[in-house]
Amino acid sequence: MAITKYSKWIPSPLDGLSLEELLDQMSEFFLQSGFQYGFQDVSNPYNLDALRQAIIEKLVEMGRIPEDLLQQWLEDRSEGDAKKLDELIDQLIRQMVEEGWIQSHQQRPAPSSPDENAQGSEDMPAGSARFELTDKSIDFLGFRLLRHLLGSLGRSSFGRHETVHFATGVEAYQATKEYEFGDTLNLDISSTLLHAVAREGLGAPLNLEYDDLMVRQADYESSCSTVLLLDTSHSMILYGEDRFTPAKRVALALAHLIRTQYPGDSLRLVLFHDSAEEVPLKQLAKVVVGPYHTNTCEGLRLARRLLMAEKKDMRQIVMITDGKPSAITLPNGRIYKNAFGLDPMILEETFKEVATCRKAGILINTFMLASDYYLVDFVKKVTEICRGKAYFTTTVNLGQYILMDYLKKKVETIH
Image 1 (cartoon, rainbow, N blue to C red):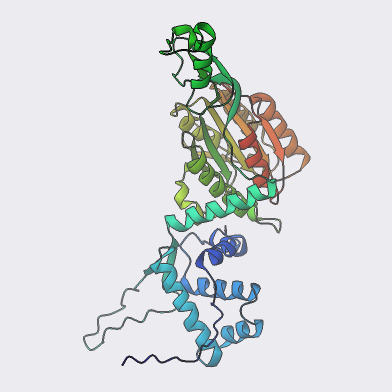
Image 2 (cartoon, rainbow, N blue to C red; image 1 turned 180 degrees about the horizontal axis):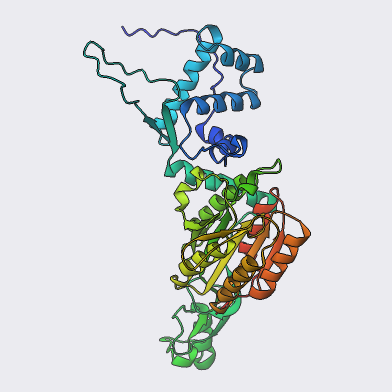
């Protein structure tokens, strides 16, 4: 006879906690930009000790564990409740690895000298284990960030890029027209039959003629190629405010929106500092700012080259910055820098590149995270040259402005 033994249920701080909820709550940690490190180099993946502490701090904020237990864990995690909590966190991290949310890497230090009598061990020194976000977690974070941003806009659907033109496409609407040569044969069956009945009367068989054909019209949906141009100069984390992390969050949300709702559109990411380079969106979570100048001209030049290779109806640059241009790349490849005031030579080269973008049919929408009067004048001049739009915003409403601009298509449509 089978016997089932029941043990006493012991409550756990992790009861009812989903990994999706935890990742959503920890998005600030995963997307941090080096704000708390100052000038230190934090370009390497985070270590697992930092992840453990971030998880415990988040559990305290969520009310799942008391704050005094966190203090006990920080002081000594080898005894009592602190040891049990440390084991629970290790179990949670293993679950995150098994389900594909993060990847763990063990970095073994090189031995100083060979020792024949030494025995092998799998224990690693503290801080040697590293982790990285996977494509699954980055895509999930993009989805959650997009949902939060659209929720603040009061939207329940993503929509499409709508223009004032009508065409006979696959998406059917109520407006109909007589079929003309070259139209997509998206027949409106009821209107076609009514035309035939009105001409011949109700009878069988019903003869259809060319003039009876009616097709449904659809809104013409344009394709758009976008380059997100992010300023990674050190001013993005100065003055007591982290301005780069919100920009990273917007980039992930915009990438998820385009991939899921506008498959015909494209989004590419360019970082500009002393110079400029394109970065794959899947590596965006690891990008941090550094002690660099602001080479706006080089960023615009690289973005223009990328956009000209795209065969889309519309090409646009979404530039997020908080500082003045303070560097340019000279014809010989050297970088000229001047961080004091607005250098006339730097401004001239930057305005030339803006004019080149306009000639190429590329719109530049600038989102400025600063309100200094000389920066306002600079952005106004850029907007005047390229006939784009300028938004003087903050880190709080940056995502709302960018998504509203993208969804509502406030810029002029190029056909």
